[in-house]
Image (tube, rainbow, N blue to C red; front, side, top):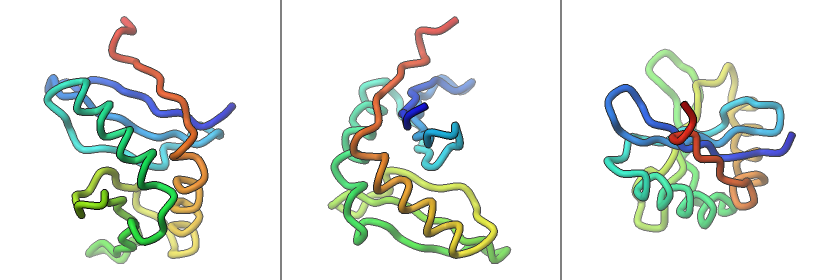
Length: 113
């Protein structure tokens, strides 16, 4: 199975996307968008920016869990990771987004019933 983006709608009516690795693990999630086209634009921005290491903010949550945000050239956050158990695991997550983000196919789940 190859990496893929999934566009889906939340219970709040907003649209989201997530990037899944080939093993099905979610490696990047988005904020909510008012429209599906907003989520599609977010994916396009991830594809454009994912390959650049400088676009990743390596952060630590209050509980000590490492995570990362992916930012666009305008410094807006376009995606965020899960919480990781170690900085090494977080860095592997970044590498997976860098590798898969630019080439993953988009699957629209909003039409699935």
